[in-house]
Length: 394
Length: 230
Ligand SMILES: Nc1ncnc2c1ncn2[C@@H]1O[C@H](COP(=O)(O)OP(=O)(O)O)[C@@H](O)[C@H]1O
Ligand SMILES: [Mg+2]
Image (cartoon, rainbow over all chains, first blue to last red; front, top):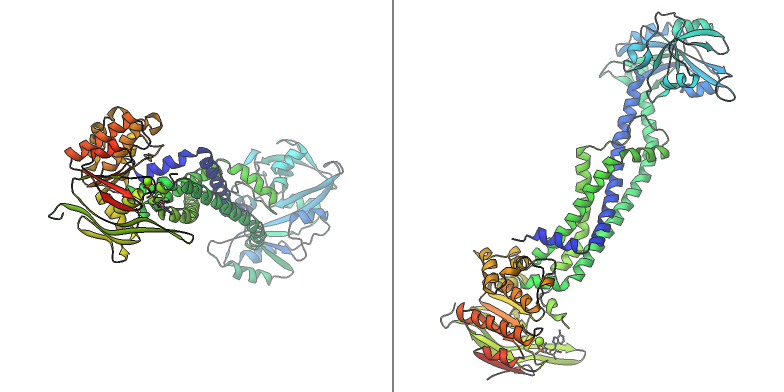
């Protein structure tokens, strides 16, 4: 027996091109929508992952020291402020602290870097505590230093790439003319570590002629009160505290602006799809007035006709919506690249995360919006009088 | 069912159309009764009000005045009428309709067209009626064809099967052969006569074909909205 669902399908197949174009419209708006929401989720996840990859959630730096190593490098290391290494012992005493690691940042001008020379960033790290902060570091070749004052370096992926170094090569610290041996090269992490050259803390201190450090990385205990710790750290003399959760908030605020833009695009896309649905369904109702009248002489109630037309809308929206989600999944990479272009800061890894609940939510939204737009045409169809089929004869 | 076997009673039905300032009395005070199992043919010149009248009798249109009872139930009368939903109930309970233009759905096969009313309403056992009727009307070899692949006479047979699938009491046929040649008209006429005789189907038919109208046991002539029994 033929069901109302089959009747609705046949109706849609009657005007294949029109149905197809409507489907495309719904598909595109679903695609935009699911990618947008997927991006919201994915971006924060990626950002968290990036911050997780820092290995520590707080940094203590000497006051006046710029936030970012990049800024420090632009100033050629001249703006660096130092603090006593004994600071580490004070910090580790705090109950919220799980681990600490002292770091000495140095920047040297390398005349052989690039066309007109460039700044090389050196990180003096403590072989005893630093690797434990970064357990996720993977070596492309080699490994960590052999002892705490070894004349050795570990190079980030890009730093090694730039200098064309292999494990076993010698490298020269510019300005200081000290030779160090490459013992390890890291895999790409997608973070600043890729461009960094790591040296044992003691060796870099000797090269730089100082016993001080620039930074302490702090890993906070799970569930510890971070803001309480921050307040206490601020009481240390001449230091400032950088919290990555603050940095994250700042970045997320920047992202919110970009998000509003994309959201408005999504809303416009949905409106266009909605107009498409209304147009398609209304046209097909008007074309079929006579036929609908005949269905009424057969005993179809206004509600039956309403449901029939509404079913058509439902089919259009679900098929278009599912196709859109499928495309979004298929082309998540493309979206990723597009999104990266308009973002102020893009963390590494996939930015668009589409999971089942999100896909379902989008589908429900699209179908909901579609059914809303189908209301009017369906209502109109339900009101067709049976007589109209006969009156239109001549 | 009333004792007298009366299925339809109309009293002083009128239908007035106003076109600008002019009032057209398309149906002008028609009273008649139809018994169960009758075959009534309405004749008369074009514009005499046949279609308007049978549409009112078949609950497809509202009269301007007068009363109509169907199967002992008041449909129109005393200035009020049943609502659209109740009218639909009466229609699907009592009537099957066929028209000059068949109105088959072109994307559905013959079988699906006949089964179409069942998507909305089905009397018990109506499913079996689809094939039985198509066989009865000699269409069993065309069941999976589309309407575009069969002749006009065959289309009207399909329309008849569709009208009868829910076993109505009354078949309402407005110019059922208006689009058919003489031979096909005769065939359809024979089918209607057989349905009336063998199945006891009440038929209300409009036709200006005298040969077809002669099939009806009862003929009513329409002139200027008024009905004359002959
Ligand atoms: N919807 C309408 N609006 C105005 N006048 C109508 C309408 N339907 C029918 N008429 C008029 O009513 C009269 C009867 O028409 P109709 O019942 O179709 O006649 P018949 O079926 O006998 O040819 C005609 O004068 C026709 O013009
Ligand atoms: Mg007529």
